[in-house]
Image (cartoon, rainbow, N blue to C red; front, side):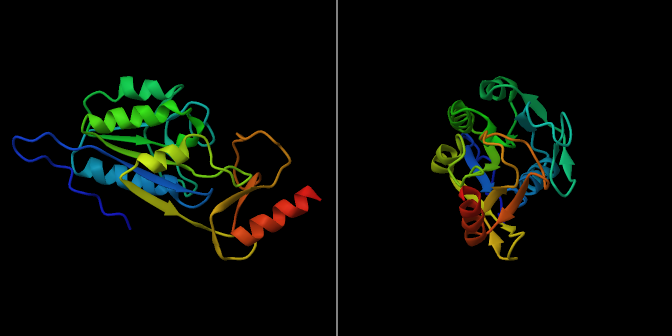
Length: 198
């Protein structure tokens, strides 16, 4: 379990910011872990702002909701730069589904961390083809703390780190749940991709 570094500042010194990234496949608990960390910051009486991309309306238009139905309020935004404008003087910035933003999300996270803010980002590290997803590789590279979470493979019961698409849509972005995706281990994912090619 991730233990938060000390966020307080010493007298006469500016607070140091940083970036935390929570990554993994679908159904691995990324959003649940993001919500857990944000709730702990709220309990610690830190000022928290939370954002998600407007296009993610699967469970709720405004709240971030995990697959296990835990939720926390958030502000939907169209562009990564909106986060920079809306973060204000908060201590902690939470961002869910970061893979849906363009690469400017990296600059935004860096700029906010450079202001002394703690940035907590969650997102899919790979798309349905097992390829790096959007800005996530760059966020992983610049983060001080990286947590990779795993699901359980729906085919084998092993640890899963791949999101296998059950439908034949070829668009990289396809919002969905258990009807459209399942978590798979490397072996089960590769077997499924081979069957699909045949």
